[in-house]
Image (cartoon, rainbow, N blue to C red; front, side, top):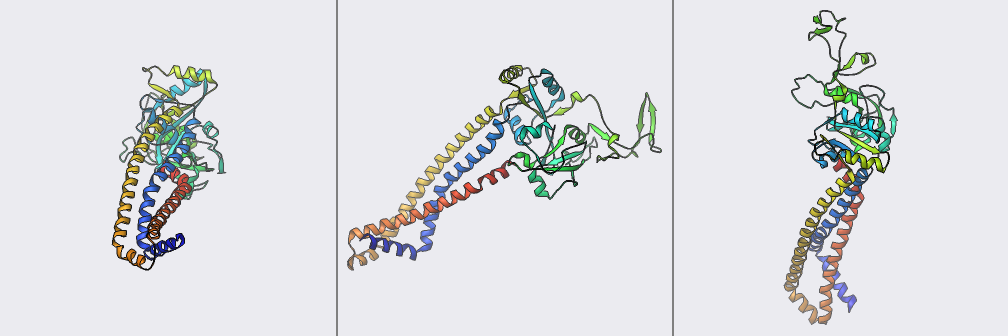
Length: 391
């Protein structure tokens, strides 16, 4: 009896393939949506948490701690006020830990240009896949995805993007020499362009290079108090080469130059506590944050939103199940003559009930299989999707 009922149910489902597929697909979507959302949230959390936990402390301008974390850790361009090199010098003089400066204010065709020091590469565990490290002003090394996406290699050149369309100061895009390509490590570093701090200041316009004014014929307008004033015929350099390297010079006191943030690696637990207390005063123009704590706060907010989304999806699932039940009830009502004919040829009422039940089970099983397949597909591709979203 059971096998006969299963056979009748299967024959009906196979005969009405489109109807079965639509019902199973609708159920699959409402089942898979919360599962896929959970997978994506967990993958994003793992990718972001490791970077936050591996960064003990951050120093930046007082204001939004979240903006500071997103800027310094994930290179997201936030409205973050800069701090000066004076704070970096004071931190190093304290001897409480290692300080790694970061400047995340400029970009090259939407890829962030990160001004930093060699210590950053060791701190993040970055190493070269090909080429060499930065050796002089105007050099850069590329993250793996930047190089792959643009087809760049050591020896090529890359221009910085102009931050303003009309730059009154006359700061031109800098042509940077690519020295090396970093090995991929699945973090925002793969999508960044790394230079030293002086190169960032050169992009900002705090330094420049030009032809020898004295040696340039008819270039001198006047000379007074030891300063030479030249006319517009003096050629400004937008590229650093071995020939013109000595022609570049910086202006003003470098302790007043700006950076975005400072990564702090305290030498021990006592130094970490002292640093936290040192920047606790609200009157200080800078703040110190622990990225792990800020990340946990961000995740708590995200989980609240996720819980609300799951609740909405649960209601949607309930509505979908109710609609599916209504569809089956209407289908069975329209097939009364069919069931009556089966009863006339000897099929028992119990077998007919089993037939209806098996039809529901087959459609439900199809929906579960499709939902499981979609969830597995998302789970396999989630790491690459999350890296793309965080880029």
